[in-house]
Length: 212
Image 1 (cartoon, rainbow, N blue to C red):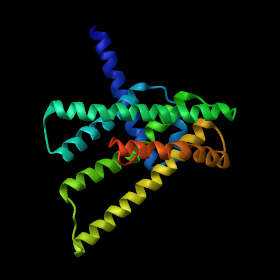
Image 2 (image 1 turned 90 degrees about the vertical axis):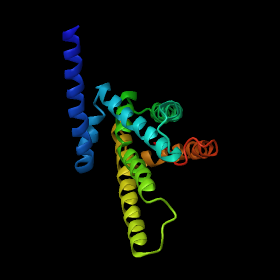
Image 3 (image 1 turned 45 degrees about the vertical axis):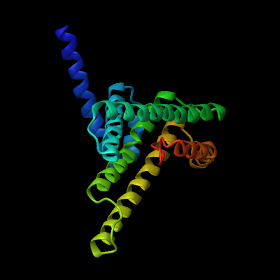
Image 4 (image 1 turned 30 degrees about the vertical axis):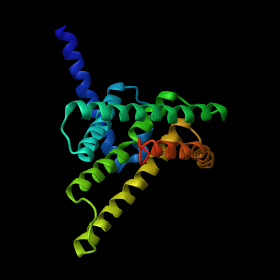
């Protein structure tokens, strides 16, 4: 029993080290890092990503409803997390099926790991917006401070969006093992169903902005 606990702890620590190293690499060396990520099969790393995602949902629920009630936080954020998992599986399954249709050498686990890590800009942006919504709630003035904050927020948002697009492209590039033009075609097919799906999620007040 003790040996099993030590082995598990060792594995968790090792997974955390790889997890943080990959995050660092995605910032400074995204191309090289994503090529390594698609070969990963350490599912503890996915657990860490899931913890950060669920942590955001708890944080956002707490900020939005201004409550620390553990039952409300866990039930509300838990329901949103289930929809997130369903959306994540739906998206990765779509690209897997499309890869098979195009007769590409696609591996589903590669899609799962690469798309999970491509959530990094998404998680950062949502945490960032929720935190500043709490610290500097709207409406914001047209003063120098208000304009400076808006410019700062816009700059950060655009930077994270560009990073997200890059990671999304690289995840498809290395998971599907195909070229630029075919990826563009696949992305168009993806948008055809995902945009209406996102609108539906918005109407049901599940996600105002797609968490993907």
